[in-house]
Image (cartoon, rainbow, N blue to C red):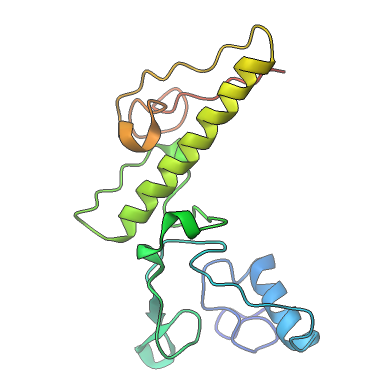
Length: 170
């Protein structure tokens, strides 16, 4: 891996996660396996990042992150079409970060993803309380960004500072 050239010096290096398994697998399936047995998934719906559609390419010009001529803006993706999300841009939900949508349209999708994550957490705790005798879900008393975090955040910050952690039934 080379920072400026990516894996195998083939350009797999100019995106979030390129230095990790994500970039290595992209290189492997495109160049080692030569595209056999692989299918490119829409980046707005699989491993959705809520990132800007363009990045600086060589020479400083803005280019599409996926290498295409025209870019799909994943920040306005329909939340109901997203199958997997990567919270690297939005930050981890237990950080209780508030995304001000007046600053960037990236933050609208981040807020929707945080709400979805909180709803999943709420569902898990509800199922545990119905199926595991004596289980008590975490208190949802937080008032910070209550639409997104559904009462699981007091303020920005992890655990004792802001996040109300999930109680595990084990």
